[in-house]
Each structure stands twice: as C-alpha cells, then as structure tokens.
Image (tube, rainbow, N blue to C red; front, top):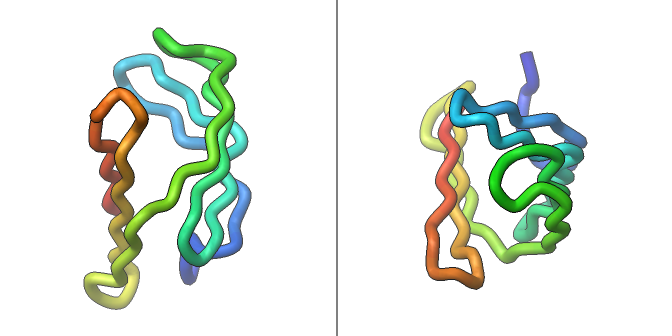
Length: 74
C-alpha cells in the first residue's frame, strides 16, 4: 500500500475502460497519458487539488479543458 500518492508513477484502470498510464503525481500537478478510453492517446499535465482526508485516505480533483471534473479518492 502506498503511504502517499505524491511523487508516484501509477496506472489507473477504471471500470468504464479508461486507463491512465502513466499518471505521475506531483505536489500540484498530474501528468498522464490516456492509454484506453474515448480519448486514448491524449497527454495532459493538469493542475490539481490534493487533500489527505485521513491516514491512508487521499483525494484529488482537477478540471479538464472540456469542463469535465476528474476526481479520485483512495
């Protein structure tokens, strides 16, 4: 189990078929490539909001250019 997502290189696989790989999480940005899903091939570096909710529980959110909000909690 990760102590924190910050500074990690991750693969996020969602039930909807979207795959973010790699997703590299910095202190205030996420740098990712979509490997699968409707926008496969997209590369983006997004400013994001991060919060440690409790020990072992973290949440992030960011806005896409389309206006969509991406939110992960783990």
